[in-house]
Amino acid sequence: MGLIIALISGALMSIQGVFNTEVTDQTSIWVAAGWV
Image 1 (spheres, rainbow, N blue to C red):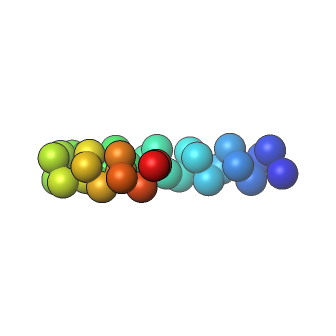
Image 2 (cartoon, rainbow, N blue to C red):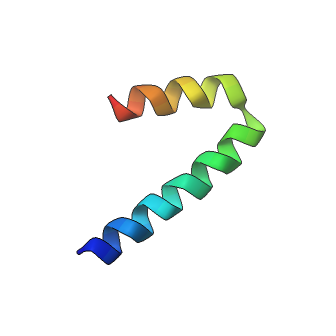
Image 3 (cartoon, rainbow, N blue to C red):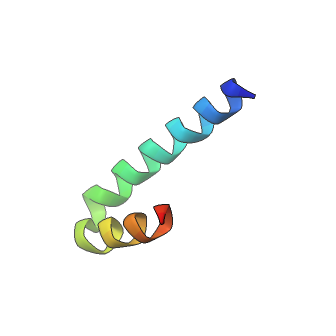
């Protein structure tokens, strides 16, 4: 279970990094809204 969570969070981090390089402002807002 913990391994799956680690893999998912790792994937989210890398996806977030790619998005942040492409569209910084919109992605930051979208990610912030997604975490709420």
